[in-house]
Length: 270
Image (cartoon, rainbow, N blue to C red; front, side, top):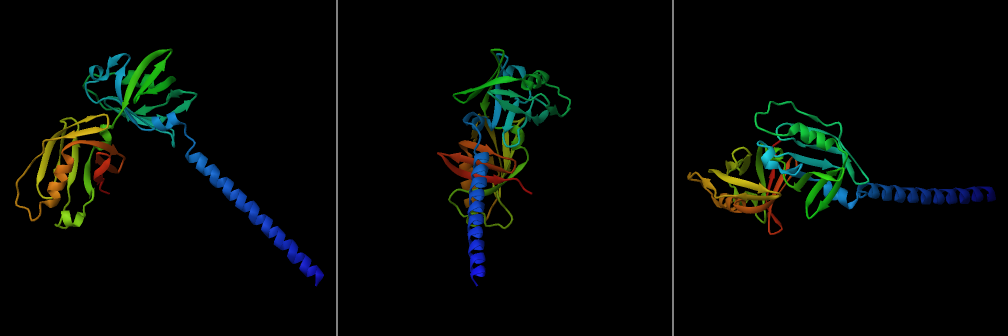
């Protein structure tokens, strides 16, 4: 009987120790996971976005690239760089260490480009290594003490392509706004023409737009004048779309904000 009690006590102690060790291990693993997800430096957090070229080798990007303005998007979770070079899109791995950025193995599409640009020189510059500095929202890349490129935060026009479906209007019930089943507002960007268009829920609409960094300016909006059973949603939508708003976009979601509040949310159709 004493032997059985002794064995039971030993097993209980071992079980308690084992649970303590496992608990410590789980806590340690959790801490390591948190550190891994939050292990980016402040400048890496700032760098991890889309940048639009402002100057290249001391000249305005608009003077050198007559088509698209080159962009650069950095993802520090995957160490992937992508964007457009002025005509073609590009992508590949990058490295960032001790304030130096380099991407020597980028690949790009091979479209025929008819407008003047310095695409090959832009890719050669990105190969680096270049020192990185961000001051007042301007990203500067330098090589051998000389500024080779300046970028500002912005939106890659390629990410806006396609049709966006309205998902939400801030503070409103979508079923009350758009009573016709299966009908909601849409938004499409034409970067070459500088125009937005779509369906506001019943009527078609169109307007000019400009993007400066992350600010979207739309309007005035012109629309058709069809007889519609409910214009409440349409009016709310066009009112929120018109004017200046902050734009944010991912591969499948687009938001417009005014005065710090999201006013319109769109999604890409599946």
